[in-house]
Amino acid sequence: MENKNKKFDLMEVVTKGANPPNCDLTMQIKVIEAYDGTARGIWKVDDQFINGIGVAMGGFVSSAADIMMAYAIASKISNKQSFTTIDLHITFHRPVMQGEVMVEARVERMGKRTAYVTAELIQNNKKTADAVSSVIIISE
Image 1 (spheres, rainbow, N blue to C red):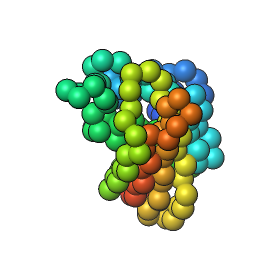
Image 2: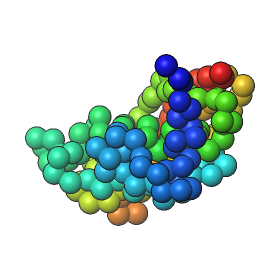
Image 3: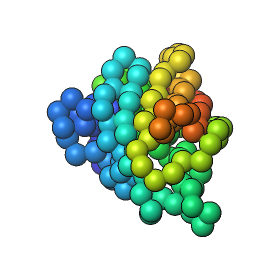
Image 4: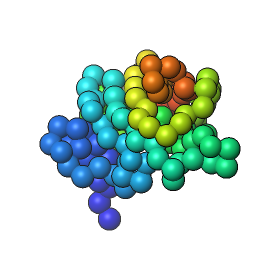
């Protein structure tokens, strides 16, 4: 079985309008841009993401950050490389409600084997969460 390069696929979503991965569709995230280690997208939060106390469940918030951080790292690596998240930490500042959330991710540091990526989630001009992640870079 051929190892399909996921970076190329992610960048085609951004540059050529290719179909996004199923996780993007499930999470209702639309990538606006991804270039040179920065990615921005909109997460449409509706009632399917809302928990029993009326706010978006933290796991969904974490997933939105992780998805956008993937686009940020994808914009930095070569076609002969892939990647995967090796840890993810999130800090919540306020609840995410139904509506649109801007998710911005940035590669802060990148080495040959690992990268450090951050994300910020903003709703109604207020920060709802910050995420940091370490990503392992896999060469063919």
